[in-house]
Length: 447
Ligand code: UD1
Image 1 (tube, protein in one colour):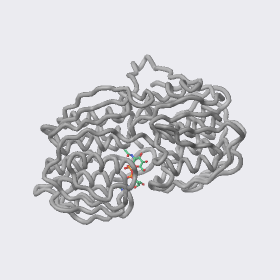
Image 2 (tube, rainbow, N blue to C red):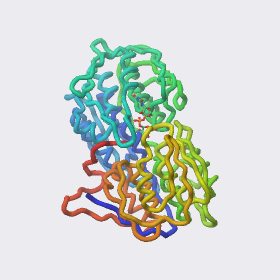
Image 3 (tube, rainbow, N blue to C red):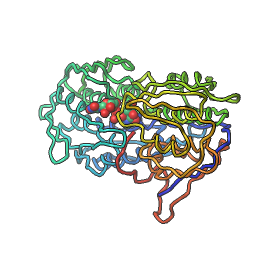
Image 4 (cartoon, protein in one colour):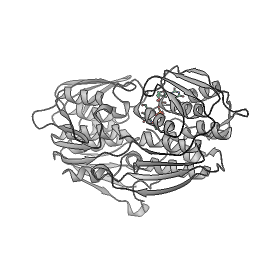
């Protein structure tokens, strides 16, 4: 397996192209199942999870042709033309769902279009049990009949789906996306109350609208969908990745550099920008992007609580912990979304961080220096936090198991190296490692 070697201590300077959001791309690709016409998606990131979703859709009968195009700031956004003319298969097999939990996003569209779907039940993953009970309960409220058999969700809607007023007891991004897609083709009106307000949900809703869906309340926690008989094709560009943006923003702040995040949108990262500003970084909007810099002084400790959007995202929790680890004074992180999302803590401690976890909170006492070490992580954002730690640590850090990184970060080491970081990918020739974005993602897929 490939690994990444970093020699820390260099401030980052330069532009970094921010790609399309992985977490928007996946539901948008699944939405292609709702129409027999072509959905043309651009600004897709070149990451392994997008390849996994493409493989799943091809297995279901979707025809996909792909192109690359030079996008903003040199970002090579991919363009996929997805056409689900005939859906030939309605089973999402264990092997693909196991690799990427977001495979469950085909459930709602398959049910709505074909009246049946068989999707392997995702298991737990590195960051918690992560059930899909709310997806199933709310689809049942639209009239789906759902059973669990031999590890598979067996869902049918022999008479089609019918609109209903749904109340999510807890906001769920994937659950909202599945219901939103299903409701576009249901009979009558569906109201989704306490819907997730993440920008990726809004991106999906805008794309569905372009395909002919009738949706009100986009961007709010109440989505009102009037079902239509059919959806058509559309052309749609994926929203920029706010988590990739936040990750490189932390990289600039901790190394004491200045980076221009091209294609980034400040309005999508307000909670992260506010946190970084309180810690002592400067964030400014520039034409077509966001500048992040810290050229003087040390960072200050800050307290953070993860929350649904527009709060501080759980997908930035591991990264901000690295900032806290090298800031002055004590910081506290409270994780409210996932119950087991501190798997990076022992590895950061091995690099010299002073972190104590008490239940859902972590107390981080800043240290003057981290020291390089061989480390590995069990999920995507935890892995990138170790790369960030390596950028500020004394000496050499080798992060292994980076297939997690390749699931969600496009050309991470190239982007950082172009800003002056001493970082390189060490290819495991014995494994015949494929290029990033084409890799077989590992088991236990998590965000
Ligand atoms: C999505 C993101 C992930 C992010 C997460 C929270 C994608 C592909 N992934 O994951 O990167 O970290 O949102 O912002 O977009 N829950 C239930 N029952 C359910 C569904 C969810 O109990 O049926 C719980 C989960 O265990 C978790 C919380 O609700 O504790 C939020 O999960 P959810 O918003 O559904 O996350 P995902 O859509 O899986």
